[in-house]
Length: 118
Image (cartoon, rainbow, N blue to C red; front, side):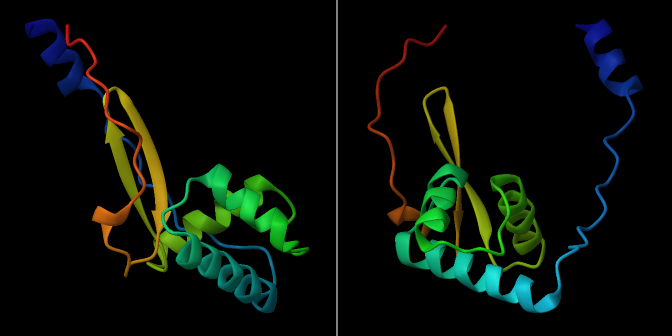
């Protein structure tokens, strides 16, 4: 117990992450963010995979990859255009992106199961 407390106290704090600077032109950034915001607003709280599926259906050519979309989502979260909520069911966590105006009680959830607790 004492040794774990000493290890925790001796460790360095996690460094602050610097803000994201997007390399795309402002016109493309505005188009991408508007499409992603509309998708999240229309289809409710979404995971990254669900958002990527909707973006592929729209056919946004300025978005090059799923990694690029994740960077844009993080940038939008920093600018408080989107927020990230955690849907914690049992031992599983699911992170969902939603707009600031969505009520978190309306989020889709998995059916609850009674997991044996150790």
